[in-house]
Image 1 (tube, one colour):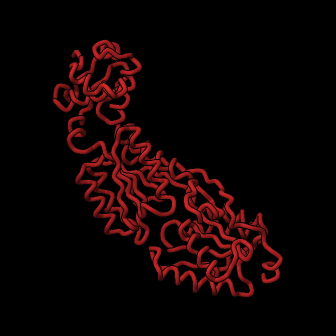
Image 2: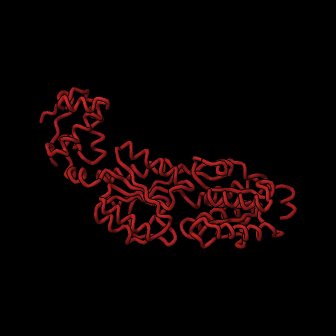
Length: 384
């Protein structure tokens, strides 16, 4: 086969980089049926001559087509049009989806940025589905994505209630790659990109101990998901440092969302905790939005942070917003987590990993000093 783009095509694509022009032309040949599944492409040398570009440009263009699953390169044999190339071009299989419980709060904006960045680098479009942590809304989103024959889905599963395996199995049965973010779904084998919630709690506890705190409180919006691991890690670190996390200072709300009722729950429980003679000197909240609300409620109560009580949160390394920047927090790079999820989806789409691959990528944790963690004051020591 001899490839030589018509002058009209060259003029139309003249503003694009050379590798993009070659990629666009090859896509046109595929879409027009002149290149068919199973066809062998010319050698890099032949393509470079016929398209009047360098071999590096050819390699760049072919690499992008391979990442999109349109061609496959067989060592020692050559480059071939992928058997599913026609289906991919006609069924929307260049789209990756990100299914998350919240698109605006916590570290989810960072997760989206990393996911978008890595997907666009592979010329994949992105659909983001916000489930509001609602199981039925998530089920509807997954059905629609399955109908679109999506290229792959990265999902942070709902926690209230927990996502059942039957929501995911039909996707695997149709050959759609799935990557779990933050947590797995029982009875489903798929890659996971996450962080250790246990280690998050431990880091928060150790930071408290370093500043002299020996009695802490834990506030979380719900018991589901990773909350029990955050609590366990915090308790273990405090006990190791000679402190404790009394059961009466562990406060969970039944609400899965930030509401006026939840704010009232925080106010009631913070008042009860703070006015005890043996009150805690530090609070850990395993989510930035929860810590921000605790901070505001304490402020309305006339409680100064960290003079009267310290506050530690958990969130993304990208600290946006006036309150988030002030919070002392354990952090995780959610942008990199999103990029890793795309990498795994891409590898499964190109059949370099099976759909039931059990790769686990555990993201490292870091610390943001903020302004809300201070040493135990003399006044706090007297009360405790």
